[in-house]
Length: 603
Image (cartoon, rainbow, N blue to C red; front, side, top):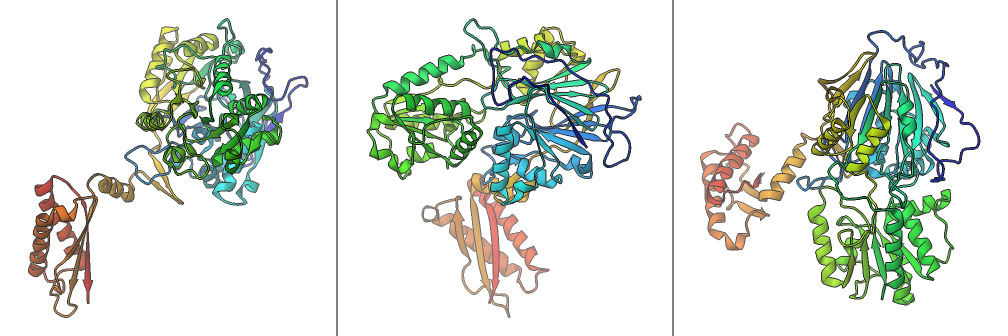
């Protein structure tokens, strides 16, 4: 059962950020008890020695992405985020990776709600799949976040968004009772509208989790948001801090500096301005459209996700512009080149994204020219370094004006750096510290920072995915217990786990290729009717390796002569024999291990 505690009036809605107003509030506990819809008892359990809070990261503690954390107190479960991780280079054919929810099977009725911190895909991307598998528990988030989840849900399965049970966070002072959890929120800065931090109060500890966050500062270098109220929450407090910037020693760029640089580039460009950025950078996209409108320029937007997000943001009132400012992509050539701003996806070098198609000359309405100004207004997602390097090389070959973050501040990171992490820990003064949402080495660096500023080493926990962290009234403990957290792959419409044979086969074919052996035999005698056919794909070029192919063919003939298909134990025995013997032979000759696919046809 969900109980909402109404916020006092006089506070601006969450979609309207007021930087002049300090982000402060007092925690107000509730003595109300919500009856459990499953057990008939109070959702607030007796606080005996058996009552423990479990925190279990199902993703996001060994990689960038796949963010999902389970909070469990007795029979009550709250989930924070359901994100995707993009595939690595050794995962051919995989669309993305999602968290493993095997631990939650059989506990679906205990899930009181799923809270989404913000609308980036590494936090909401897996929602359509996982919500359905978990019986569609209530989802909680701010306006833009919920709207983006609904659109993604409809893309996944038409009509499924109607099944979502949504609770909108309308005000920072909103309070929810979700079983044993008292849930509150606080304002944070991040690179998307409607991001929110989470406060979970339980009978044994208070958890503070900002989701992804950054530290926006004013001209004097002072943080705009005040987080000191978090230090006054009921003790003990557990700070789970996104730590992607724990290795970043660079000073943070300000939004004002970024806007000035982008404005100058748009105003002074000799030709068209082509800007590649994340489709979720709603605030930045809106500002670029507004800036172009003031300069009398037209804006074309391309990329499905960007068009969708701009449409959602416009409906919610987060982006405002005159109808004639936006033009269709096919109308770009109808205007002077210095009057065009082209916004698109693909700044990470994604193969099917708009910017990649423009670079490859495959875009229907836009061809790169030397006097175009191409701006890459995004940070590099870890793991994409080589892809983005190739993207930059190809851009520089075709265009004289390429601008990116290495030469100018045209992007503000949505993640706090080392200095910001230190400031946050000092301000919140938690009893326990758990770094999250980053690679393991980044988490370890954040743990070092926490130790430097006074958090007790025994109270700093660096978990792996699936590792259970427990808290009771007396202490916290990073246990040795683990729940399933291995990769779950999404491939087209299929979902499978990390032991999937298909992925291993793809990896083998990507490395050493494939050899198909087709043997046609007489159905009455078992004799070969003609020489076996051999097809090589990605292994060797047959015209240049005739001797190897012929030697392979003769070996197959001998094997089939010595082992008549009609008298062999079964057809699979013959196929395995061909696969093993030919595999050994080819490795001796080439030091490659192609996938060998034998086919025996009886006629």
